Length: 114
Image (cartoon, rainbow, N blue to C red; front, top):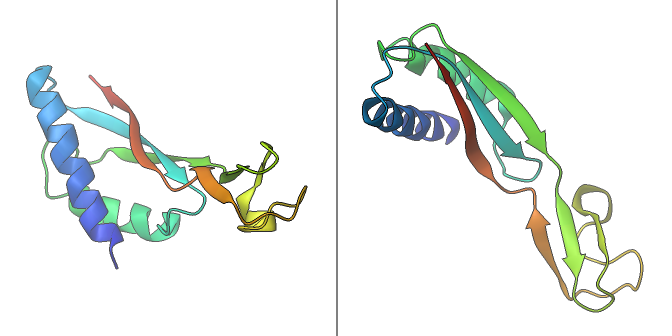
């Protein structure tokens, strides 16, 4: 379960931002989670509840997950399409000269504090 490691990294990052900005308490962290990131949202939130209870700064805070669609770009025809529906092969020109444009990210988008 790599979700716990991800959560520890998020908490470390939030603690650094909080120290730099003199934040005393975080009420929520908004996370952008790519559709093909390989991270299971339910596992992430379960790990968050446990790990957040160990840090006074984020204890009791919410982890809000915003999904990011996986989009692939085709170098052959220049079009973009849904990765999850069509995979690596372009549905427009059947080319395999494609690459993932978005959808594998795990980003801290926002930290809500008071």
